[in-house]
Image 1: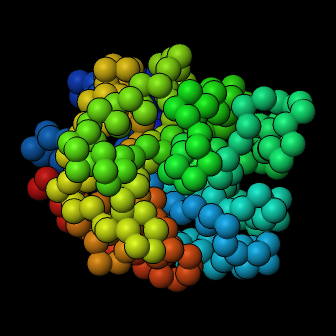
Image 2: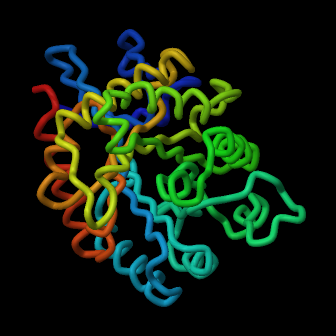
Length: 305
């Protein structure tokens, strides 16, 4: 088996021509495992690992954490795995000086959609872009359910992040009550359809999705089973296909919600899960690095032979 990246020979949405063979459609950041003798292709998608630090870690703690994480993961190919961390606002400037974006992408936990104005306490896309941010998170469950943000507001944030050439990470998820009423599919489809309303196919490379069931987040959260997470991820990918067509396969869909060393391998083994959005289990660099390594190994072990 020969493994090679397809990034150097891809069309608009990643179609690759390898060794004079017919075109193999490959969407997203992927690897091809090619067996020339059997003339077959196994597509191994790039994995994504990240963490939202919420209102934890001082500036010094954040920079030390990033230094250690970069060191602990420096031998992991970034074509194989994308790493990102979302610190608090006060740490963003120092965080950017600490790590190379080629090693670890950095994002903001929230953003107002206007460039400037009388919006006391808000942060604009221009301010984040000046700090060198790679992505903006929109729609985290705490923004929706603690601060009362609406799907239409998340849509404005997504559009603003894209307009300023930053990736938009849209978080979606149902509450425990909505799950109990059997409304999970409707909730997720609504959040996606409104959150990505007015987004074009050409903006797909800067779209990420994180599925975080509200009932599974936090200290008292109940982890979703791998099978349930896979079911919801399939629904999300089908909805994205309805919105954007086949190129929607380029949008990575991560699972987040009480991810820990005990369930990470089962979750990442699911074919529709493209990465893990890890909470407090990622807040010690060495433990996060171990989780990432084990997850990558588990994903490889579950690829078709």
